[in-house]
Structures are given as C-alpha cells and as structure tokens.
Amino acid sequence: MIAEILSIGTELLMGQIANTDAQYISRRLGELGINIYRHSTVGDNPERVREALAESISRSDIVITTGGLGPTEDDLTKEMVAEHFGLEMYLHQPSLDALTERLTRMGREMTPNNKKQAMMPVGARVMPNLCGTAPGAIVEGNGKAVAILPGPPREMQDMFERQLVPYLEGRAGVRIDSRFLHVCGIGESKLETILIDLFHSENPTLALYCSAGEVTARLSARVADGEESAKLLDPLENEIRARAGRAVYGEGRNLTLAAAVVNALIEKNITIACAESLTGGMLASRIVDVPGASAILNEAYVTYSNEAKMRLLGVSEDTLRNYGAVSAQCAKEMAEGARRAANSDCAISTTGIAGPDGGTPEKPVGLVYVGIATPDGCEAVELHLRGDRRWVRELTCVNAFNELRLRMNL
Image 1 (cartoon, rainbow, N blue to C red):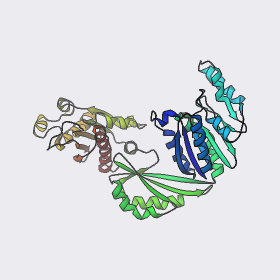
Image 2: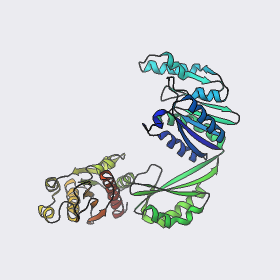
Image 3: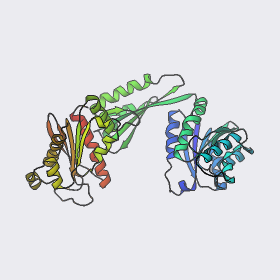
Image 4: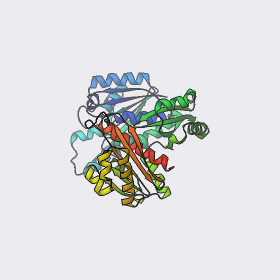
C-alpha cells in the first residue's frame, strides 16, 4: 500500500510552525509496513487544496491529511475531500453532541461556526477527537482512501494511534518491526565501515542516524501479520553488537545515554555527584530527567567561578594558578571534591571553553576536560569539540556520561 501525506495550513507553508505531524506519521507508517512516497504542504487556499488533493489521490492508495478542520471559513479539508469524491456534507449528530459537551465543560459558548466542525462527508467513517474539538474522518471511494486528521500534534497523534492504526493494519496485511541500537564512541563513518556488508540485506534492513555525539542503528524487518520478527532481527542485532562491542550502550526507540547510565546506576545501587563548570547544570538536569534518579543522585554543584571551585569542591589555589580552571588537573580535583563532599560512590566533572569567546592558541574554544572519580581513582579526559556554545556543552554531556559508563562498566 502506497501512502502520501498532505499537510494543510498556511502557517506550515510559511515556516511559522514546524511540521512535526508529517514526521510522526511517516515514522509510524514505516512501522506499519506502508510505503510513504511523498510529503506535500499547501496553504489554506481552496483551489490549491483541491489541486494538491487530486494529485495526491492519483498517486497513492491512501492520503493522510492534517489540518484544516477548524471552525473558520478557511478550514476546508473535509469539504474538499467530499467534493473530490462527489459526496454531500451532513451534520453528524454524535460529533455535534460531543462538541457541545466539551465546550460546555470548558465554559465556552457554542457559536454557529463551531457546528461546522461536526459536518461530515456522507458515508465517512468518523473518528472522534478525544483531545480536542475537531473530529476526523476516513473517506473511501474508487479504491482509494483519505484519512482526515486534525493539525495539533497531540490531537493528531491520539487519533492516529487509537483510530487510524487499526484501519491501516486491516488494509496493509504486513507490518514492519524495528529495533534501535544506540552507539556512542564510534562515529557514523567508522560504524558504517564496520557494518558495511550488513546494509546489503533487503529483509531485514539496517540504517544509521546521527545525533549529538551518538549514532542510532535502526534494524527493520518486514513480516506478515501474526509472524514473529525476532528470527530476522535477533541475528542482525547480535552481529552488530559483536562488531561494535562496548560502544553499543542499549536498545530502545526512546532510550538516551543519560537514561542508560542512570538506570544502570540505580540497578547497581551506585550513587553519583556532579561538579559542573561549562555545562552549568546540564548533567544534573539530564540525570533528574530519568525517573528514580533520586535514588542515586546525592548532590550537584555548579561551580562556574574559581572561588566556587575552591570553596565547594576543594580545588587548590595552586592548581588554578599553575594549570588554570580549564585543565585536566582542575577537572580531577573537581570530581574528587564532589565525590568527597557528597559522600557518593562516583562523581563526574566538566570544565572547558564553550565559546564563542575566551579561547587562546594554547586553550582554544572547544577544549574540554571531563573528570571521572570512582572508588578506583580519578582520571580526566581531554576533548576537542567543535560547534557553537550550545553544541559544545551538549557534546560535553554526552562524552561525560559515556566516559562514566565505560569506566564503571555500566
């Protein structure tokens, strides 16, 4: 089955908001085994919507539209779909009742144009909106189908998962199961070289995606309904892990490096402290983002000034005078001081030059030191990072968590 996404809204066309709906739908269609060939975006103009809709339907088995379901005159998606299939519009009473009840509960008045949202093409399969006021619909004709979804991401995603997915599964007959292996410490180019022959398989398939300091390997297998994908995915995952080794830190679509590290610390009952300079609390924030982090995070220090490093962490004045705040010696004393002050099992520290100013030929922008203090001692890692201020700080956090993971065998 071939699908196409038609995003409707002048605000999307003008770049005033990001089109996250199309990204979400594309990913989910792939997982359902449905081929997605095109994304199109059109403004709230009847002629252009009419033309784009006709083109999309001519190329695809199913078109999924987002947006244009509001109460205003320029919200015409349902009307354009009904016109294309030669259908009349009618008032869908259950939708009107649900809309009236929702507006009453919110303390809002039902205006005449609100009723427009309850109008539906004759014969449409109505999809109630459990998160908003605009119901959606599935309209079929001439062997084609159009699924009409609201634009707000929360409403769209809920309607897609609850109501459109069962319909799509019934039409597709196949699905695509995916696994996501997360890799840190090996760049995309090197990882591709290590795994190059594994990309030549048609089923399962392998693809790599980059993010800040990491690479995600997506393993996908196409199987018939009721068939297990493990027999295809298990051997591929095992081979990737064998070749990439400890650089693979976990599996899961939404897994983050921080979550993998924190969950391992929780499992092993290892407490941690943070001492941050250039990252300014980012490390601690990422730890706290993980549920259950209170079991292992003892304390966190943001010691941006030299005075704070000395007073809170016990960094010696001689170290700062002889080596500077951006040095391996300072990073080690920060980590050791945090571990000692917080009475924790381990500690991580960061110090460096995030830019855009402050660099010198000897210590350029992007020079960063990460300190790792454990019961076995303390070490500092020197990093040379590139990017703007935000990117340097982001990469520092990734490297800090990865160094802790490797040195503590998490």
